Length: 331
Ligand SMILES: NC(=O)c1ccc[n+]([C@@H]2O[C@H](COP(=O)([O-])OP(=O)(O)OC[C@H]3O[C@@H](n4cnc5c(N)ncnc54)[C@H](OP(=O)(O)O)[C@@H]3O)[C@@H](O)[C@H]2O)c1
Image (cartoon, rainbow, N blue to C red):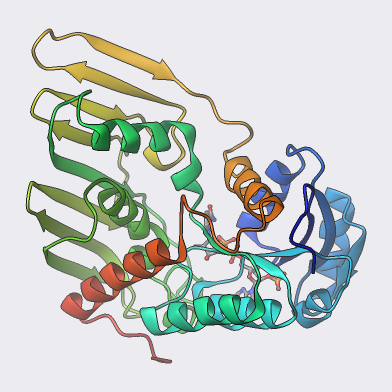
């Protein structure tokens, strides 16, 4: 394991949808290489390696963890297995970037953080929207207080219609499926990033026949404001996030969690400013660059999305799940 790396040799496990998008963007970040990929199927790993120019491919995740030519492992498996594979990779002394949510519940996330600390490796939740230039700027503008005055309201959602088989990870209870953990995490992250941990949460869900949440809605109350958040697989939405304050409004333009622009409206002058901030690739490049920077600086966590941030986020999600009565079979 080497901390002082200016370039990283990546190992990718779980070669599904997101792994493709991630590797596409990884190729856009200078000096980073895809050293190895691993799947439960060697044939799939071989194909994936060929597609992205990875040097090695494995038919099991553990073989990749034991490869000395891998510095950091990217985990793109279903939610239920993030903790297991992150812990195994970190115990093999690899740095880890793990997909969201970091773990299914706070118990898992605490174990993962302890494992990172014990092994002295860098560990971060792949909450890519945190590093999206438009989202990052809007959070800063909202918190800084002059652009739109004192912020008192957020309205954010993540909704799309999807009809997939019950076994699909989106609805499969054994894989910790459901709207909240898959996409509801984004509006919850936005509220948390602007206002912090809520004083009060009111949540309700509608359920799919598998028991996973099809739609989850939550209201967060803070000393100075309210956030109205919604996620679901039952309807299409324009997904424009609205942050409103005493003097104006900020709109993170659709699709807000991967925004390419934002708009600020001044309520006194009615002036509107549309700011374009196109992403490099789809936008996974920024979390990749954050890993490179932190590891080069010898950091074991990012100050921009810290272990504490991941822990507080999952604690909020745990509270919502407890209110709506959503418990996974393995919990
Ligand atoms: N899709 C997105 O746009 C997106 C965006 C951001 C984050 N994410 C996150 O990325 C993670 C994966 O999402 P995805 O959409 O890429 O899922 P996916 O297409 O189903 O891929 C997940 C991969 O995990 C591996 N896997 C290991 N155990 C599995 C099991 N029991 N059942 C099914 N697959 C298993 C499989 O890879 P092998 O067969 O190669 O082992 C599978 O291809 C989730 O945490 C999700 O929240 C997804």
